Image (cartoon, rainbow, N blue to C red; front, top):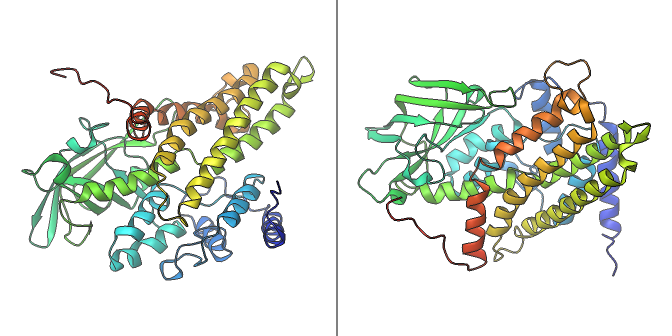
Length: 396
C-alpha cells in the first residue's frame, strides 16, 4: 500500500517547512490576546493560507479550496515546531462557523473577519446555576422592547468573560413555549451597561471562568442569530463545533512532541526517563491514542467535502476521548518529572513555567465542562450504538 501523498503535496510540505523555519524566532509569550503582535501574526498566517484556509476572502479568510491533505500537512508541521500556533477560542472555533452557516450577511461582515484576526474576543453565555447538563432549562430572560432586547438573568462558568468584548448568549424569549422552543441566540457587547462579571478562582490558580449577571441589559433587536425562539437549533450548531475544539488533536500532537522531549531530558538515577521500560510503555500507549485521535480528526476534515457524511458522533468522541487523553498525557509528564512535578507557581525549579501541572488540572475540569463525559457516553451509546436509554428515576 502506497501511503505517500504525491509530488504536489510533498512540495507543499516543503513550503510549509520553509515558512515554519523562517518564523521560528517569533515569540508571543506574555503578549495579550488582542496585542498588535498577535493580530499581525494571525493575519500573516491567514495571508499564507495556514489559518482560515477555506474561509471566504470576503469574510477575512484565505479563500482557498478545501483540501484535507494540505490541512493535515499544515497541522503536522506546525505541531513539530515551537512556532506560535494560530489563535483559537470560542469566537474562532465555535461562533465563526456558526455565523458562516446561520448568520445574516451583516453579521458575517461585522464579526467574522475581526474575530479571525483576534481583534474581538468572545465568551459563551450558556450555563446557568440551575442549567448545566439540562441546558434547555435556562431562565435568563430576553424581552423585546421596541427595537431592543432587554436581558435579565445570570450565567456561570463563562470562560474568558472578564476580557471578552462580545458574548454569544442563550436567553429565554418565549416563556410560554416548550423549553427547547422558547430560546433565542443573541450577540451581546460585554461593555453594555448592566453587565457585572465576577471571576471564579479554580484549582489551577487562575480564574478562567466567571459568573456574569445581566440587569436590564439593552442590545439592538438585530443582534439575534436565526429566528426568534429557534435559538436551540443555532446553539446545537455551536455545540457541535465546541465538542470538536475542547481537545484539539493538533494541539495534542504538539504536546506529545513536548512530552517526548521532556522524557529525554529528565533522568532517574542518571538514566533518561524515556529509557525506563515502565515510562516508555506508558508513552507508547499515549502515542497510540494520539494517533487514533488524528485519524478521527481526518474523518471530521473529510466531512467538509463529503457533505452527506454524518460526523456528529466523531465530534462527541473528540470531546470524550480527547479530554481524558490530555489529562493522561499531562499526568505522564508530571510523573516523569518526579518530585519536580509537584511544584507550582513561582518555584525556581519549576519546569516549563508549570504548564504541565496547569494543563493536568485544566483537563480534569474539561472532562466535566462542555457536557460531562458521562453525558457524552450516554449520547454515544444511545444515538450511535442504539443502546437503551438510561432509566429515569421516578420523581428525580
